Picture (tube, rainbow, N blue to C red):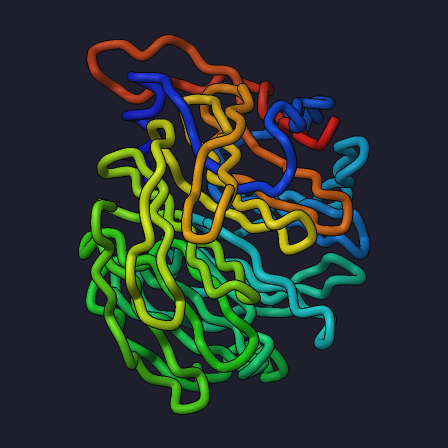
Length: 339
């Protein structure tokens, strides 16, 4: 992810998304000033409680989605990348990339319960309602750890499924299939969660190095943000056929889909969000590009309000070909919503 981020900072361009709304409908409506130490990766929203869960390198912040007020700060989430929520179990799960573990915490008290070991380098994380399991996408291990969210902290994982490459974004169709973007193979891994095994590996035609992945389960469309050649690839989730590509910006790291509006989104580190629409059967087009902020490469979508939250900060200019340095205390969340 650091490579994609540096590219976005250096070249500064655009990003991608999907919509059934008309062009020009989305805009930045406010910016939540959060502050605090540490860079960030994924952000997760809980629509029921209006809370944002934000990974911050060594700790995980929980803030109010309306005003940015800090509600809790989970310590010792070393190398944290993402957070999955399991309301039925009143539990949340972080991916601690440097500790090869997940921190389990209480969703009501926002206090840690304990940790469980995962595969090597857990990055993205997903709750699959079909299997009722949490899946950590282990970047270094090239596999996924399947965790029973009801199990006691420290219990062994239920299964480990090889993915054939470095996993990034993932999505569940809720009916037994989980789809995983495999970045270094430019492919999609398909998991059968009944058997808990890899059943397909689909090559993306015209898309390189996917990181973001979102699913329109009703219409069987996968949306893949491909940072290797700056496109969003659209794939049939039943056959694995690539239906087409549309141009996006540099530094894409996340895609989302809003089932209420029929829109898919991809956030790019160059500070843009592009809206993509199926304008006729099988034809996908960019309908809007929203200017967000430099570094806003991940996002969380609240489908109840169609609001998008993108974490970023202010940066010092890069020197000597190095990574741009974040200005202390400037961490923020840019909020995008329909006008």
